[in-house]
Image 1 (cartoon, rainbow, N blue to C red):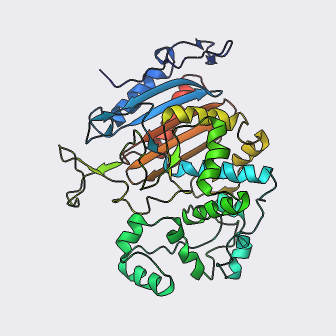
Image 2 (image 1 turned 120 degrees about the vertical axis):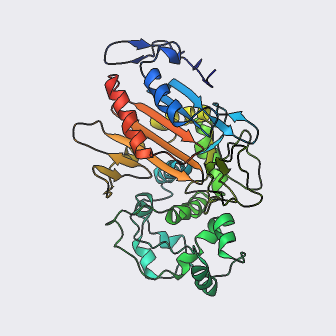
Image 3 (image 1 turned 135 degrees about the horizontal axis):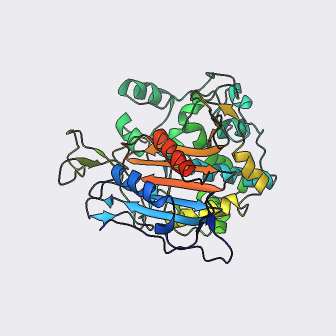
Length: 400
C-alpha cells in the first residue's frame, strides 16, 4: 500500500470550501480533490516508495486540501515520509527571515533602506555603506562571495582571518555564520552597484541573523521562535544545530558515486549515500537555509503568514512585489522570494532550492490564494520544471 497521508484534515470550518471553476466543492477527503490523481501520478513517479522521497501539500485560502508523502525519509531505519517528518527546507528559510525583518520594520526598529555598515563596524570598507537591507533581501548587494572552496583559497583566507579550522574541507563542512561571514572583513570592492544586478547569494543573508539580534535586542533564534514561529503556532520548526537532536528528522541523500567516505551511510542497494551535515558543504548555517519543519507545521505557517497574523498584509504584499529581474525569462525576485509574471499566466511567488541532499519547491498564487509545497530529501529532480507541471495541473483542473 502506498504511503498515503490521506487528509483527514478536511475543511472543518463552517462554510469554508475549496471550489474549482467547475463549481465542484471539495469538503471531504483528499481523494475527492480534482488535483489528487494528477499530483499522485506526478510525485509517485518522481519519488518511488523504496527510495528517498518527499511530501507534497496544497492549501486554498490557508486551508489544507491535499497532503501526500512519497518514499522514505530515512533509509537506515526504513522510515517513510509523513506529516511529522522534519525536513530541511533549504533556502525557503529566507522567507521566514525576510518576514522577521519586515516585522522589525513595522516596529520601527529597522528600515529597509538602512545601511548594513551600521551593524558591522568590523566591515571597514566604505562599500558597505552603500548596501542596504533591501539589497540583501533582494539579492542585489553586489558583494562578491569569497568563501574559500579549495586549498589555495584557504591559504589566502587564513592569511587574512583567524580561524578555528585547520583545513578548507573542515571549514566548508562545519563552519557556521561567524566563520562564514569573516571574509567580508577583507572585501574592499563590489562586483556591481547595489540594487542594479540580481545575483543569488547566501552569505549576505547570513548577515541578517546579526541584524535581527541587534535590532531586537534578543538572540536570533529566540527572536525567531518568540516573534515568528510562536504566533503561527509552530511547534515542530527550528534551526539546525549540530549539538541538538531534531525529532523525526529526515536525512538528505544523493545518488552514490562510488566515492563515499568510510563512515558515510550508503543504502543497502548501493544507490544512495547520506548527504547532509558532515558531507555537504556550507550546510550548517541558519539564516540562509537552516530551518527544519514538518508538513503539518508548514500548513500553519502558510495560513498565518498570508492572513496577516505574523506581519501586516501590506508587509506580506511587499515580499511579493517585484524588485529586480533575474536572467530567467519572466522571473524576478521580491524580498526573499522568486516571482513569475509570464504573459497569460497567473502571477506566482515561489521558491526553489537545495541544501545537501534536501531539495524543495513551493509556490503561491496570490490571486487564487493557492499554495503548493514540495519538500524532498533527494536533489535529483528539476525544480523549475516541476513547478511548471504544478501550474499546468492547477490550470487544467480549473483551479487557476
